Length: 380
Picture 1 (cartoon, rainbow, N blue to C red):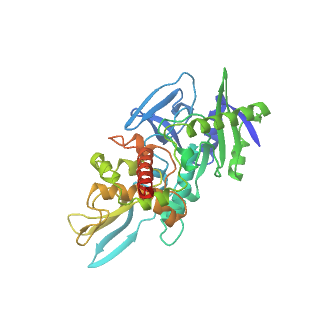
Picture 2 (cartoon, rainbow, N blue to C red):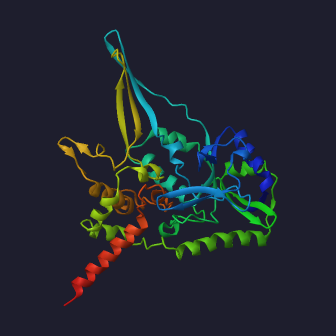
Picture 3 (cartoon, rainbow, N blue to C red):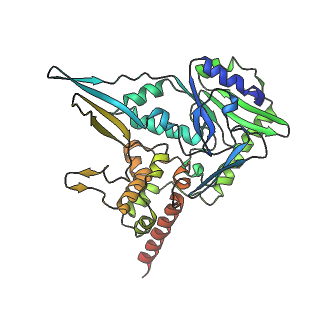
């Protein structure tokens, strides 16, 4: 059932989650960006702030109201709390001419995420398939994911770089979450429509000063989300994703890859900001005495030359091949590996690209070139 939580009682939700022993993370304004950090109270949230995003551009600015979640997505995703950017794997110690390998045992905290958008729930689900299923499981990820509590948020506004409707991942929350909310501001009324999606979520709701939502309020909240979805479908970044795998496989030798490479810096910003990219590498270090060594896992990117380096050199030695690998893996071969696209339409790769390369624009360009080639072949 849906209930109404007054915005003035949002602090009750925050403290109810923290009192259950969770480390609570959510949006906060840090260094001129709305990004994720630890939330101790409602004062940590970016109330009254929003973000303006374009290709290669990001800035925060004041809203005309006091919305707590009136922004799109920032430079960091929830990935940094589940697949850690850098972590120790094992240590080696030399004692009396013997070598002892010590596995690092992590102390994994209970974590809760506040304000998870639908696209980000889809991103977490994608990483679940990659890192916690199959033959190559990441135990650090699995332990952190197993204890996760999520408070999802239906979107009623979006950034210009968002294209979740193209990937069928939003703006409405469609995947399970412990709690799901919609923030509503109507004149002087400021409240949340809230519902539970798990036993843990229901227990949290029992601690809150809730009242039943009216049918009119429920309908209005649903209309807000549906209106945004329709606006995005009519927007300039919406595109048909139904045949992307076949389209990209047909165009592995497209002339457009060279044009993108002329602009791309191979800086890896897109993969670092992406909520689903999972590439990592390991680093071994020793101290000066030679008595101790450590192995660390850290994020890596398909845009770095070392990631595909084997004996004899790099498999993808130039920017053209790296950008093609990233885009075709994300939108095409990901389907073959994991039965879904690797893109959730959050738009981070567009916003945080220093030269403003737009994935949706590249898809449309390749489609236009493909259609032109088909027409030329059909000519007598």
